[in-house]
Length: 273
Length: 348
Image 1 (cartoon, rainbow over the protein chains, first blue to last red):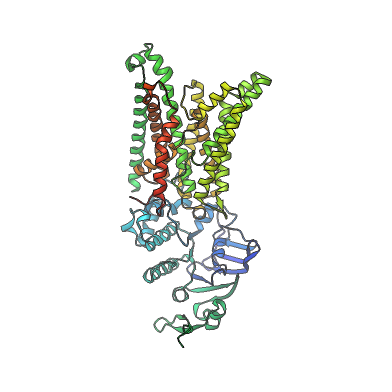
Image 2 (image 1 turned 45 degrees about the vertical axis):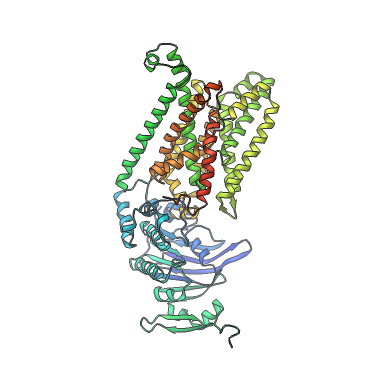
C-alpha cells in the first residue's frame, strides 16, 4: 500500500465535512480543516467541543458518520493499521503505565509499524530509537523503568515513541495537561521542533496563551463546529474567546514576542464589596 | 540493551531447559519403589517398566500441562493488563472442564444407544475438542462481559471469571448425577486436576496440540507487548487489535483446553510461574512466553512429584491440582494486595 505522491504544499491531513455522533449526541457537525507538513496547528475549544473526537477520527481510531478524513490520501479508518501508523503517530493524553517496560523498550515499540512479526530490531530501528531518545533528552533515563519516572518524564517517553515511529503527522492530545509550567514549555518546545523538522503537528490544547505563543495556526471548535481558523492573532479576539468559552476576558499582547495574551477577567469575589 | 537481549534469551531458555530436565529426572527418580536409571535404560525389569511405563510418561504429561497453563496465563495477563489473570481464575479452565464433561456425558448417552459410536466420542480427541471449545467460549464470554462502556475493566473480567467458574462447577455437578456412578467418579477425579497415567497416543496428541498453541503464543508475543498498552495505543502503533486478540484468544484457549483435557482443573500455575519468570527476564513477552512455558513445565512436574510422594505414608495421593491450589491461593491473595498499589508491579 503506497500513498499517492503529495507535494510539500499539499495538505497531509484533510478533514472534509465530517460529522460524528455518540448515540444521539452530535460530537462533530460538518467539520473541515487541513494541515500541512512543517506546521504546528493548535486545536482549541471548551470541554465537549469535539477536539478529542476529531483527533481520534484523524488517527483512524473511529470512522466518521458522514464526510471524509484523509491522511496523505489514505482513509485512516479503513486502510491497514500498519500503513496508517507509518504516516500518523498519536501521543495519548494520559499515557497509562500498566507493564513495567523500560524507557528504551517503550520507545522501541514505536518501531512496531516498521517491523516484522517478532519485532526484531534492525540497525535502522536502533538508530531511530536513539535519535528519538536524544531529541527528548531521555538518553540518561533509557534503561530506567517507566513506573520509576515522573509524570513529565513519562510524557517525554511517549513523545519519543511517537518520534521513533517516524510519522509524517504527529497528533498530540493535550500534551501539557497535568504538567507544571516548566514541563509545559518543554512539551511545546518539542512540538515546535518536530514541526520545524517537517512534521505536520496537530495538538489539542487548553492553554490559550501557550497555544498562541507556540502554534503557527489555530483551529477553534465550539459545539462540534469550526468557528475560527488561522494565525493566533486574528483568531483569538476578545469577542471570540468570550463567545466560545463563555467567560469575560482581558485580551492583550506579549510585548516581547507580539503573541496575543488572554486572561480571564474574574469578577470580584462575592461578599467583598 | 538490545545486544544483551539475545544473551538474556539464550540464558533464560538454557536455564528453563535445565530446570525441565532436572524436574523430570527428579520426578522419575523418586517413588515408593527405588529404581536404578542405569538398569532401567539397560532394559532391566522392573526398573525399565517403572521408568518408561509409569514415571517418565507421567512426568512428561505434567511438564506439558505446566507449559500450556503457564504460557496461557502469561498471554491472558497481557490481554487483561493485569497480573491476576490466569486460566483457572478467569474461568477458562472451568469452561474447558464443562466442555469436556458435556462431551463425556454425551458419549455415555450415545454409548447406550449406538454402542461403538458413543465409545469413540468418549475417547481423548473428542473430549479434548470439547474442552478447547469450552475454553474458547468462556474466554470470549469473560472478555466480552468484562467490558463496561466499551472498555475492558480487569476487575469486572476477573469477577465474571469467578462467577462463571461457580456456574460451570454447578453444571458439572448436575452432569455427574446424570451419568453412571463409575463414570461419575472418573469425571470427578479428572476434574480435580490429576496428572494420571495416560496412553502414549493421548500424550502425543496433547503434546502436539500444546506445542502448537504455545508456539503460536511465542509467535504472537510481540503483539502481546503492544496489547499491554491498551487497545487504542496498540492500534495507533499499527496493530490490528481485533485480529491479534482473536488469535491470542484462540491459542490461549487451545493450550488451556488441551491441558484440561489431559489433567483436569489445575489452578494457579498460570499465575505463579509468569510472575516469578517476569522477575527473572523482565516484561518483554518475546522472552516471557517461552521462558514461562519452560519454567511452568518444571514447576508442575515437581508439584506432581510432591503430590505423589508427600502423602505416601498415608497410602494416598492427592491430585496435583490440590498442591497448586495450596500454593496458589495464598499467592493470589498476596498479589491482589500488592497490585492494589499503583502499577501492577511497581515494587522493585
